[in-house]
Image (cartoon, rainbow, N blue to C red; front, side, top):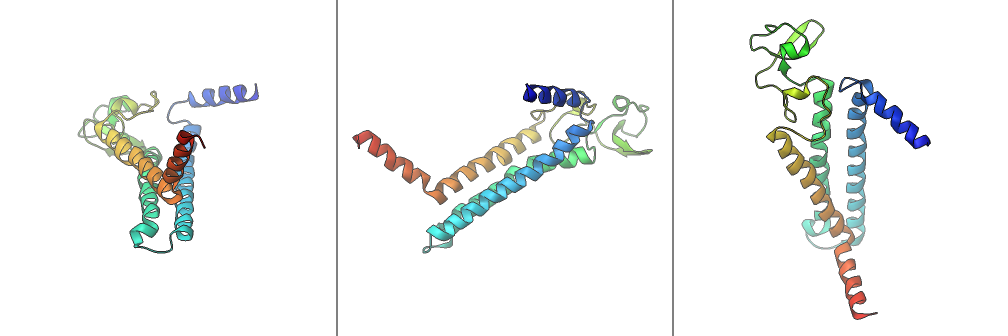
Amino acid sequence: MVVGALMGVAASSLNGGSNSGIVDFFHGLQPTIMVALMLSVTQFVYWTCTQRRKRGTLWYRQGPTLLCAVASVLVNVQPIAILAIGSWKLCCAKCADLGLPQTCTSSGYTYPPYGDEMRECSAPGGNIFWDESYCKGQNYALFPTVWQGWMIQIVCTWGGYILMFFGVFQATQLHVKLAKRWRQIRTGR
């Protein structure tokens, strides 16, 4: 019941749209957690490789560490980009959609203003993840709606997790252990 009540409070807080403080808070919290987790995995892989792989080429000794280091950067591209977009309100919309005069800029498009200062941007609006319909703060952007966002999602985020998977498997020799256990199960030992 307590969890249900907390979920209800969280849901009602999120109904304020993308400009509510709790959404901005979690846009800042997620990259912090992701960086800490990914660097912890990379550190685990580094020490595992250092202890278990004493001889051989650098790639043999620390290849899994390099895979996890690259994965750490790739996985964090999207959350940090979304943090920057949310922090500096980098969603280009029509002036009228933001409640401003249609001629607030020469192109008719602007980022949400800082005070009285208009920040002109170019059509068709939006940003690297979402089209301009998401700039009003009424839609919850769970998945990208423009091709650049999908490329970041697939190449960086998913590609990063795949690299991390292979790095951890290589460092721990989990694939060898699983194959050995599978052979034991198949032979009935």
